[in-house]
Amino acid sequence: MRQGPPSYNAGAVSEGTADLTRRKGDYGFDAPLLPALMGATGVFLAVVGLVIALRGGSLSNATGPWLAAVFFLLSASLYVYTTRVGKFVVWADLLQHAGLRGDEHLLDMGSGRGAVLLMAAKLLPAGMAVGLDLWRSIDQSGNRMETALANAEAEGVRDRVQLHTGDMSEMPFPDDAFDIVLSSMSIHNIKTAAGRSRAVSEAVRVLRPGGRLLVADIIATGEYANRLHELRMEDVRRRPLGWRFWYGGPWVAASLVTARKPAAGAETAAHRRMRISRGGETPRM
Image (cartoon, rainbow, N blue to C red; front, top):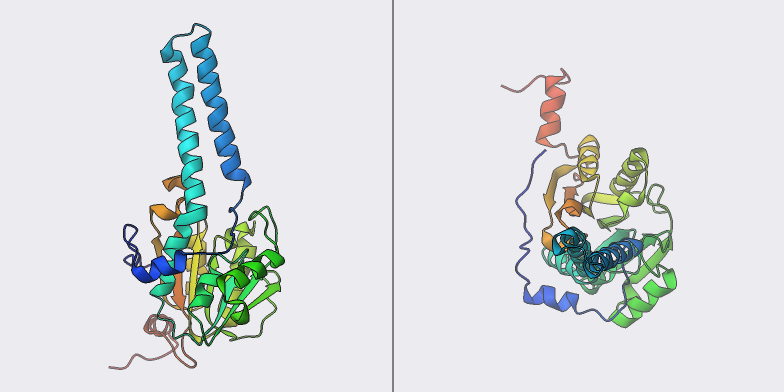
C-alpha cells in the first residue's frame, strides 16, 4: 500500500481555511462520555494524591497519583480541543484543497450535527451537500436531525443541504449518485469488520465514476484501504492527519484514506498487470 505524502500541514492554516472554521452553529462533542471519564479520572487521582500528602504521607508517595492526574487531564484537554477546534481546522484545509468546482453533489456518511457537511456546503454554491446519519447521541452529543438543520440555517447553507436517516452499510441512494463522498469519525462506530467493509463498499457504489472518497477515522483505516483496493479503486492512499486530530494523544490519532473511482470503462495499470499475470491476456511486446 502506498503511503502518500501529507498534503495537510498541521502547523499552518491558510486564510481560506480560517474562513471555513469560523462557525456559527453548535457542533457538540464526539463520544462525549470519553472526555468526561478522562477528566473525572484526573480529578479523582489529584484528590487521592492530596489526601496522601495531607495525611502525613511523603510527597514522593503522592507523586504517582499526581502524575497520573496530569496525564488524564491533559488527555481530556486534547480530546476537547480536537472535537471542538482541531478537526475543523484539518477538514477545512482538506476541503479547501479538494479542488471543488462548486456544483458537485457531495455525501457525508455519518454527518452528525454537520461539522464537516456544512463546511463543505459553503464550497458548493451551485451544488448539494447530503448528510446521512442514525442520529445517536452516544456517538455525538445532541445528535439530532433538527440540530443539524438549525446549524445549516445558522451557517447560511440550508438551501443546499439535505439530511437523511439511514445506515451507512445500506444507504438509501442510487448507484453513481455523488461526485464526492466524505466520512469523518463515523465508520468505526460499526462494530464488526464485515459491517465496516459493507459501508466502504456502499461509499464506492454511490460514487460516480471519476468521483473521490475521503475518510477520516481513528481505527480500521487499513481495513478501509484494503477494501478499496479489492474494489479496484484508483490512487488509494492513507496518511496521518497530525496532532490536531488526536483524541487524547497520539495513541488515538486519526488517519485519512483517500481514493478515486475509475472513470467508466477505465482499467488501472495495476489491475491490468494483475490480469496479465493471471493469464487473462497476452502482454504486448
